[in-house]
Image (cartoon, rainbow, N blue to C red):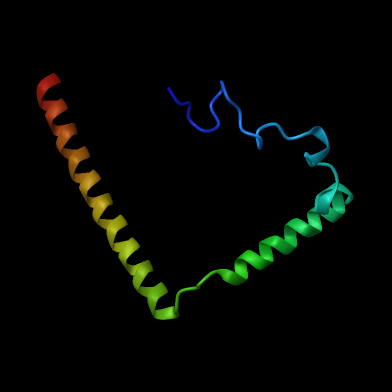
Length: 95
């Protein structure tokens, strides 16, 4: 029977990499900077990500805000009606 490539019984040549080829995780961009340097890098990354954001136009923002407000008002009304209904049922049952 043939074994699958990279099985436990027959390791591939790639699986047996010598220790000298493995990279250490020390150093790099973050390894040599102090806390203020890392904080500055974090801030620069935030600004870079915010520049990638596609911001809505004013009309889209108005539409989305209106939809949310209407939905919240409808849900408030629904919860109010259910609350009053349950209160009346409880008052009727328990006196």
